[in-house]
Image 1 (cartoon, rainbow, N blue to C red):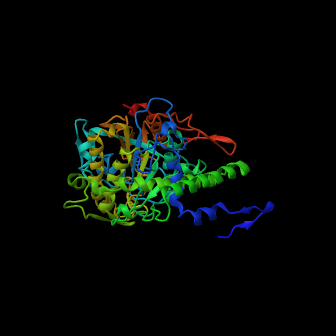
Image 2 (image 1 turned 45 degrees about the vertical axis):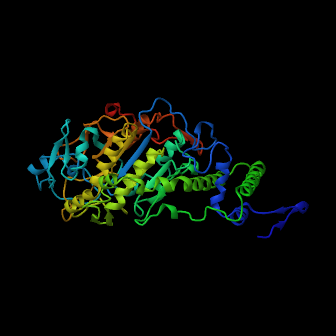
Image 3 (image 1 turned 90 degrees about the horizontal axis):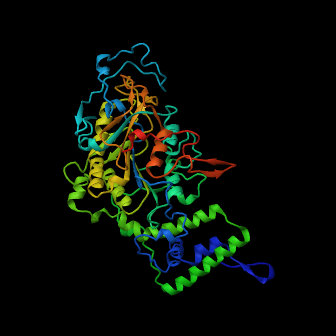
Length: 496
């Protein structure tokens, strides 16, 4: 790197070149944020957010919150409500028929007659909540589940409905709800991302599902895709500088901070550059904490077996339309979700395999049975683990997909997309357990009782987290934006 002569015999060195060539890469840049506070060090468990100027610093909610964290179990591709948590006996009575005036709602593709669910439902727990035989492990926690059977959304297209569920918009131009929560509340541990996305490969829409969009970039989700051979100590092997003492590195970092301040004084704040610097600082801090947070080898043998990572079904693999779906990966991600919220992470999303494995336009029976075998035990383990540790009471667990499926048949034992009525469930975080809220018609096609739009779900989630969805706004392009746009109301009936 050769400095270039400038006016008044000064030399200018680009900040990018300086960062790239002088200070051992991006890792040491983050030391500035850590060393900047004498009360902390790179091994600190969490920063004292009350005195931090970080955009991730903890912020007080609008009112007393019932929940602090969200774990979103995302069933990408959309499972069938009538095969999982919304039993419809009338389907057997009218199998193969299309009774006039009952199922004439539009769908994306042509479907046949009514198709009964091949799965039996059982009333579970003291509440008697009906749960499909597909989820025998989750059924043990029926009294903790709030099953919302009256969900509906705007259209039956995967991409748009994904964006609606994550951002409140049918177009990819809004921040994810996880980004809104970080913006509104900050995080409890600035050494870890406040919003983590766990999965296996890319789902539909990919990063636009967890993008911060026009919110500052520091609030976007951090996607973590770990191989089955993951070794925590190999994440970043070049953290130690063998050529410079800590004191020398400190002087270099003070110099680079001085350059940053000079740059901002002359040219003003540059949001993109500041977001990049903040991301690099977070990336470094992550190395001091993430390896421990993601190291499941610290767990007991009993815990690993509970999540299905060991034992007779540990090697279960589902053959879905999106490829293979591995029990060990999903079970580990559920365990990691508990470890992350335990360490203060605000939002964790877990994707169910690659692409959209629940999109069963054909072979719905085989597909649902195969996928549920992979996820049932780990989800139940997550609920039980959170409950046993006292974390479920302030953690919202949300299960569901972007819409539902038709009660009518399509192709070879398949079901088409259905946005008129579908099911999600919530547990913990201040919601009522053992409750079936709302209802679809007698065939499970359309929500007819206590209809709940995705905007209402978002408003209720924010309320549980202590935020007024009408007051959580961000000014952009000449107007104030919010997660629920100009819609949504809090559904108090499901709040304990």
